[in-house]
Image (cartoon, rainbow, N blue to C red; front, top):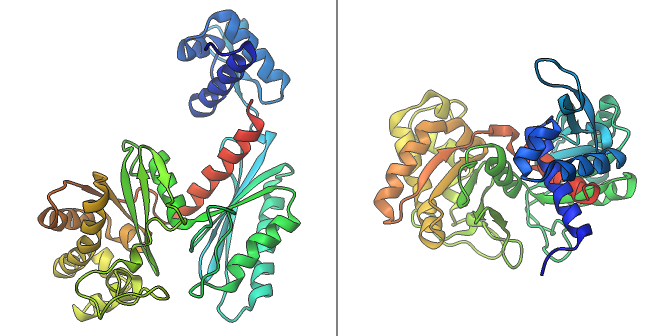
Length: 374
């Protein structure tokens, strides 16, 4: 069945807006070429988008720089403002951006274990409010929060976990109460994977697994270009993965004995010390024997994931993946090839510490566009 005229217009408008966002600014002629639409159809959609306040003329192109065909059209960047939060166990970082994703202001603040739930929440909210003011963002539309822990797929809320500070869950509720904006929350590892897929190490892949190697250990699964969360939102909880070389088996209430015991930041530090190295700079220094031992540990967990999912690509992220870089990734790939018959390229993160914030910003931008774009 052919699409109705109104549906066809909506599809064309959204396609043009995506092109203007990703490739813009563009002339009407360039839009005609990229969309394959007729000149009158492009003229109509440009007029509609200008009338809706989403598109405006930002300049002219061409040698002569005059005439209607020389007009450059671009997204009205301040049509909506976005905010992203990276909520860690002991800190919060904030970025405020426009609808094109251009950063307008950013800041971070430490949050100590002794802060208490309400003071910690107030500290985080105050940071966001202050950063929004500094950015001059008077049209805050969407806020995306990246946090450790599981997201309930039924409610979209951060699930309670005894291993995480209580202020994490409280923060999202307070933001929803106090901000005139849509507030979304997503697992930090999933957001890092979204950022690597769209702007980082996995831009050329539709299937990959991101291993988050930091204070905690987790994974994000992307198949057919889509993030997979699982039936309970727990896809990728590989810290609980039973593996050889640990003190025992993990349990439903703790990941001691699981892959976490081999690959978390504390375990990496202990391994570095056993090699006579300062844990703070062991990865940056590129010490061969230590990197070989660490790669063997990481390959054990990666092999289990690869054997089940066959993603073809593994991205090492988090502080360990970032610091280890290409040298660690190459060693993990070599070890992995000896453990599994399924080939998987291993790559280091391309976005480093910024991956979670960037993923959160992309999530906020998608939410705003879904509502604002026809």
